Image (cartoon, rainbow, N blue to C red; front, side, top):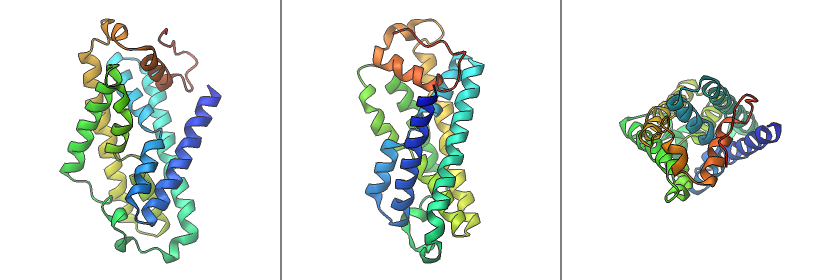
Length: 218
């Protein structure tokens, strides 16, 4: 349990650092790399799953873990940016500015990403598409953007970036819960359909720090 938490936060710190420097350097490729290794999608999909299952303890733990991840990403970006804050002009950096004002397109992307993520986790024949889902949705970059903008005293822009993240977060949770219901989560059909690999993925969503959680048997 402790090792899983350590792994989660180590990966999150790395991805936040990569995203921070990718934003400052205005590099799309680097930001995409940060999206791939970021583990933040795990507790968010875990929250969607637990809502479908009506599992209050798992819901609480997934929520706490994602909140801890949010704070960690912002803090890492903030402190990495501080030494460079005098040389950074956010208004002149495209990758920073495009993440400061959530719009309808961002909402639609998040809605379909939630559906795609749950669908991919529910089917063994498409589960390999999960890295693509992680790239499609913007989770760590907006949080890193918040840290960068706070460190450069751009508070209104930082708020815009945080709103972008929250839009993505809520949309993924809401739409991500639907496919789990569709695949018969509460009837037992769901557990018969998914592979051992996917069961391990589900277990990892919930047993990070819940000692009362009873994992799916492989």
